[in-house]
Amino acid sequence: MEHWLRQSGLLGGSEFIVPGAGARLDRYGNMSRGQTVQIMSQLRLGLDPYMWSGGSKRSNRSVARAGRIFWSRGDRIPRGAWIVTGKTIKPLLVVVGSTNYKPRFNIRNVVETTVAKSFPGAFRKALRMAMNTRL
Image (cartoon, rainbow, N blue to C red; front, side, top):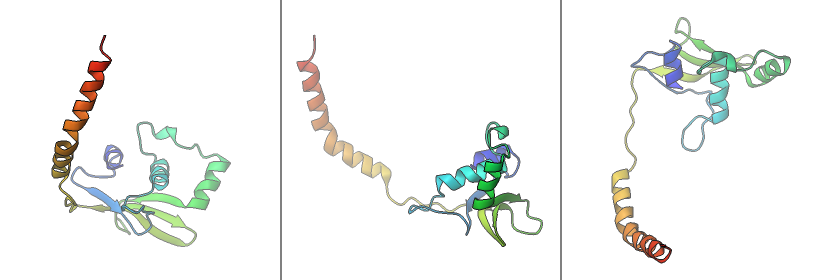
Protein backbone atom coordinates (compact mmCIF):
# COMPACT_ATOMS: atom_id res chain seq x y z
CA MET A 1 0.00 0.00 0.00
CA GLU A 2 2.93 2.32 0.65
CA HIS A 3 3.82 2.05 -3.03
CA TRP A 4 0.38 3.26 -4.12
CA LEU A 5 0.35 6.03 -1.51
CA ARG A 6 3.70 7.23 -2.86
CA GLN A 7 2.46 7.01 -6.45
CA SER A 8 -0.54 9.17 -5.60
CA GLY A 9 1.63 11.76 -3.82
CA LEU A 10 0.17 11.14 -0.36
CA LEU A 11 3.36 9.64 1.09
CA GLY A 12 6.94 10.81 0.68
CA GLY A 13 9.82 8.57 -0.35
CA SER A 14 11.31 8.41 3.15
CA GLU A 15 7.99 7.97 4.97
CA PHE A 16 6.23 4.82 6.06
CA ILE A 17 2.79 3.87 7.36
CA VAL A 18 1.94 1.88 10.46
CA PRO A 19 -1.46 0.61 11.61
CA GLY A 20 -3.40 3.04 13.80
CA ALA A 21 -5.84 2.44 16.65
CA GLY A 22 -8.77 1.84 14.29
CA ALA A 23 -7.02 -0.83 12.20
CA ARG A 24 -8.20 -4.44 12.41
CA LEU A 25 -5.12 -6.59 12.96
CA ASP A 26 -4.62 -10.33 12.65
CA ARG A 27 -2.67 -12.37 15.16
CA TYR A 28 0.59 -11.43 13.43
CA GLY A 29 -0.06 -7.69 13.67
CA ASN A 30 -0.92 -7.23 9.99
CA MET A 31 -3.99 -5.33 8.82
CA SER A 32 -6.89 -7.44 7.59
CA ARG A 33 -7.06 -7.87 3.84
CA GLY A 34 -10.63 -6.60 3.78
CA GLN A 35 -9.72 -3.37 5.52
CA THR A 36 -6.70 -2.91 3.24
CA VAL A 37 -8.96 -3.24 0.19
CA GLN A 38 -11.47 -0.87 1.79
CA ILE A 39 -8.75 1.75 2.32
CA MET A 40 -7.42 1.39 -1.22
CA SER A 41 -10.93 1.60 -2.63
CA GLN A 42 -12.00 4.71 -0.75
CA LEU A 43 -8.69 6.49 -1.31
CA ARG A 44 -8.77 5.34 -4.96
CA LEU A 45 -5.27 3.84 -4.91
CA GLY A 46 -3.93 1.43 -7.50
CA LEU A 47 -3.09 1.18 -11.19
CA ASP A 48 -6.48 2.56 -12.19
CA PRO A 49 -8.26 4.69 -9.58
CA TYR A 50 -11.51 4.22 -11.49
CA MET A 51 -11.51 0.46 -11.00
CA TRP A 52 -13.05 0.90 -7.57
CA SER A 53 -16.75 1.23 -6.85
CA GLY A 54 -18.65 3.83 -8.80
CA GLY A 55 -20.90 5.28 -6.11
CA SER A 56 -23.93 3.05 -6.62
CA LYS A 57 -26.61 2.89 -3.90
CA ARG A 58 -25.31 -0.50 -2.80
CA SER A 59 -21.73 0.77 -2.64
CA ASN A 60 -22.76 3.86 -0.70
CA ARG A 61 -24.67 1.68 1.80
CA SER A 62 -21.60 -0.51 2.28
CA VAL A 63 -19.39 2.53 2.87
CA ALA A 64 -21.90 4.02 5.30
CA ARG A 65 -22.06 0.75 7.24
CA ALA A 66 -18.29 0.15 7.31
CA GLY A 67 -17.25 3.78 7.73
CA ARG A 68 -15.96 6.53 5.47
CA ILE A 69 -12.18 6.69 5.05
CA PHE A 70 -10.25 9.85 4.21
CA TRP A 71 -6.62 10.95 4.04
CA SER A 72 -5.49 13.76 6.33
CA ARG A 73 -2.63 15.92 5.09
CA GLY A 74 -1.81 16.94 8.67
CA ASP A 75 -3.63 20.25 8.95
CA ARG A 76 -5.88 19.62 11.96
CA ILE A 77 -5.18 15.96 12.68
CA PRO A 78 -2.01 13.92 12.09
CA ARG A 79 -1.24 12.70 8.56
CA GLY A 80 -2.66 9.37 7.59
CA ALA A 81 -5.83 7.47 6.76
CA TRP A 82 -8.74 7.98 9.14
CA ILE A 83 -12.11 6.26 9.41
CA VAL A 84 -15.33 7.95 10.44
CA THR A 85 -18.02 5.68 11.88
CA GLY A 86 -21.05 7.39 13.38
CA LYS A 87 -19.66 10.16 15.56
CA THR A 88 -16.23 8.63 16.13
CA ILE A 89 -13.03 9.11 14.16
CA LYS A 90 -10.08 6.74 14.46
CA PRO A 91 -6.69 6.52 12.73
CA LEU A 92 -6.26 3.55 10.39
CA LEU A 93 -2.82 4.36 8.99
CA VAL A 94 -0.36 6.71 10.64
CA VAL A 95 2.56 8.26 8.74
CA VAL A 96 5.94 7.84 10.44
CA GLY A 97 9.45 8.91 9.46
CA SER A 98 11.14 5.60 10.17
CA THR A 99 10.39 2.07 11.29
CA ASN A 100 12.22 -0.18 13.68
CA TYR A 101 12.07 -3.76 12.40
CA LYS A 102 14.25 -6.39 14.00
CA PRO A 103 14.68 -10.00 12.86
CA ARG A 104 12.76 -12.39 15.09
CA PHE A 105 14.79 -15.43 14.10
CA ASN A 106 17.79 -16.25 11.96
CA ILE A 107 16.16 -17.49 8.74
CA ARG A 108 19.52 -18.30 7.13
CA ASN A 109 20.35 -20.67 10.00
CA VAL A 110 16.93 -22.34 9.78
CA VAL A 111 17.30 -22.89 6.02
CA GLU A 112 20.86 -24.20 6.25
CA THR A 113 19.97 -26.61 9.09
CA THR A 114 16.89 -27.89 7.26
CA VAL A 115 18.77 -28.37 3.98
CA ALA A 116 21.66 -30.16 5.71
CA LYS A 117 19.23 -32.49 7.46
CA SER A 118 16.72 -33.15 4.64
CA PHE A 119 18.46 -32.65 1.31
CA PRO A 120 20.75 -35.73 1.12
CA GLY A 121 17.91 -38.20 1.73
CA ALA A 122 15.47 -36.35 -0.53
CA PHE A 123 18.09 -36.15 -3.29
CA ARG A 124 18.90 -39.88 -3.07
CA LYS A 125 15.18 -40.73 -3.21
CA ALA A 126 14.58 -38.46 -6.23
CA LEU A 127 17.68 -39.78 -8.03
CA ARG A 128 16.62 -43.40 -7.39
CA MET A 129 13.14 -42.64 -8.78
CA ALA A 130 14.63 -40.90 -11.83
CA MET A 131 16.99 -43.79 -12.51
CA ASN A 132 14.15 -46.35 -12.18
CA THR A 133 11.88 -44.45 -14.57
CA ARG A 134 14.45 -43.50 -17.23
CA LEU A 135 13.89 -44.63 -20.82
